[in-house]
Length: 181
Image 1 (tube, helix red, strand yellow):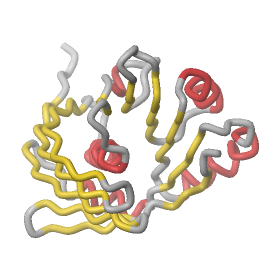
Image 2: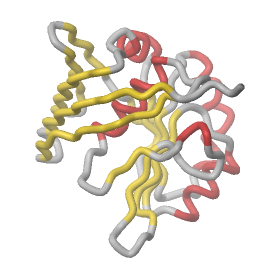
Image 3: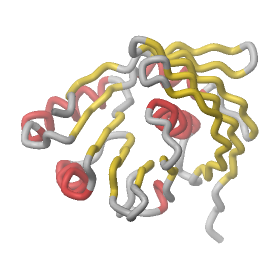
Image 4: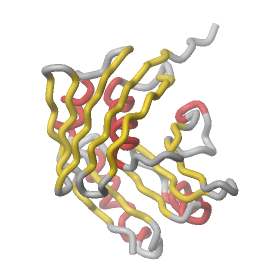
């Protein structure tokens, strides 16, 4: 019998001084059986970094043709597509063709650097693509915060991110590898 997803209840309070966005989101996040705590927390962090009233988690790993997170306008058109990890050039091309803006959050340290070195020249034609790396040290610390019921506070200022759960605080410094035009 196939394993079922594990449900995480997340109360995510976002204070984004860079975008002047201050809101609390109550999220129910399904963690796929093959998903690590690190990937789960990167997904929640990516949601916080782009928080908006229309931003939604998708089925993620269980669906090949959907990004991890998306934002659609009221007429159903894809405004923002967010992918995690190391997507292929084909996936990037398809995503950039479907959405107004695409953001990829690679993570994994040296593996992410090798992926970017291999793919970056083929991404120059995508004006709507942004690539923001998360260091292996930052994401492994984030993974330690994961629990089935979380009250996360995310503060964003001058591009730096502070994630806190209770007394535990993790500082994350996203690095822009490619900026959208």
